[in-house]
Length: 91
Length: 266
Image (cartoon, chains in turn red, cyan):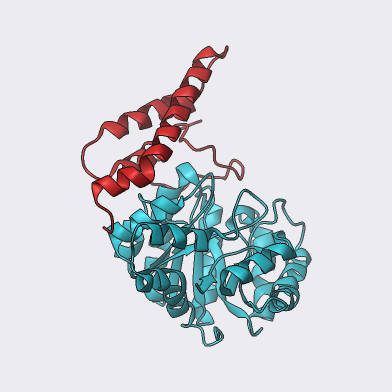
């Protein structure tokens, strides 16, 4: 790795701080809004927990928290888009 | 700085983008066939699109001193319609001898359905029977990990496929390892909202090494940045990486993979 920890902080701390506050504000915004949430909010909260993991695989773990864990192809594509979180089987 | 943009959908971009890319040091770009944002109604629509990719876009790029190459297929987003896919697969060989065609792509999966897998297998067969390179699109977001694994299974099951002649694009932290372990090349797509940021792309080079990897902008009609590759190179420089390593990722690596087609001449 080309940078030491001090340089990583110098170069990326403000950007990461900005993104973290945006996530906090997003969760506040969802909380303020009325109506029911869907599976995406649960997936998001679960993914946030992965930030507390130890080691160097947090990005991998967050991606996996949003991923379809099944192994078999689905019968028919329900559409073309992806929403960013797996809704669960039968959804 | 000189770079190769190995994945750009220039039919969706303005001429100003060609000018900016040339100014930034782009010497060649590759344009895989993709979904137009709406479903085409017949194979004739694809025939027109393939003419655009093999006749018109190379001239447009040449105006800015950029070499234009292309890949042909029906994109997995349109693969659920097996009849249309069969018609398009019949059209592709008409264009396979065009001087800027490098291979079959971007094929792959979108929602990981059975029909998508059948059409992927047919594309792989077409590539193998014509000794073509393969460029693979991996699914978006929650479908990427499962889809990448299914795609690797399809490639592994065809004994004619040499893994080193297959580029698996849009890898992220949860898929890059399995792609490299299978012997394929991996592409990191630099998007502003999804796929991979410049910082993460450099992280993956630092963690997985620089062999058999490239970066691409995959710029199209959605949120995307035609200059994503040179901008990421600048960020890599800010981290203190050697110029030779930067040049390897943005020029030498794509050149090495693409030069497996004798048509890729700079």
